[in-house]
Image (cartoon, rainbow, N blue to C red; front, side, top):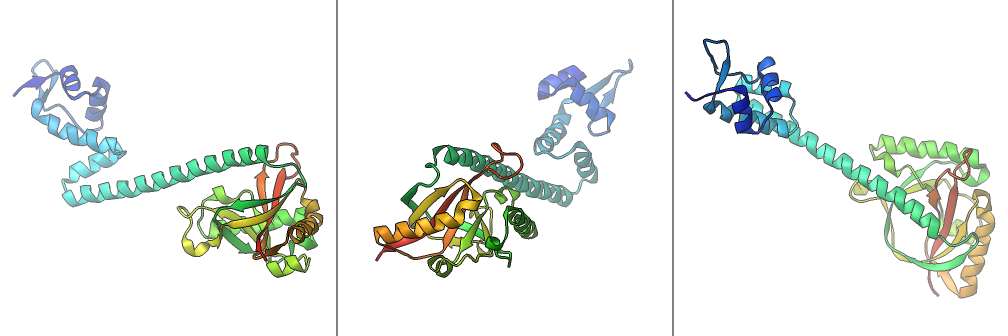
Length: 276
């Protein structure tokens, strides 16, 4: 038997001496031979077991679980442990992807706010297809003030939690006014929405907002919306377009920086249009 000291075994297998001493102390991997002088030596053939331990450790499996699986010497148990670790890894990857998307959305929000046109700007825009998560609060937003709107947002958040959706979407919420109510200037809306991604939200929970031309007006104050809707309708009539879908009030920035007592909302009021 080729006897190896702790230092030799560590160097041969690219681990530290402290690691081998820890494994020995917890009974996971111990030297094969004790010499007359009390020194303990490893056998080169033990490297195979050390390889397995290091491999399982690299997968994120705890030393406690590695020891349990190896002591059982049950291939089925080891395979089961690896499958469970695979499931945990996939969940972690999903969490990190969601976190990355949250960062992207926040950066996009700042960028859109900085590049948005001034308050009151009217213009035509082509906007690509979007996915929405919609909640009917059954309460008309236009009958109440901003404080009530905040209460309605809690219902939206509750719904996201209930549907087990990432909380990154609880930002930049908007409202929907039906085409009929928009054309009649009837201010009745009970639907809140947030834009979501197909990757993280089941299709059955989403509503597709088709790509197309939208007549838009930008607004820097929650309480200006009604007046600006009248301006938007006049603009559409002036350019000779026809409203072909629901009006939405989209918050392109929801950043409480300028004010700490309420949301720093900057809105893009928009409605899809087409040539008559």
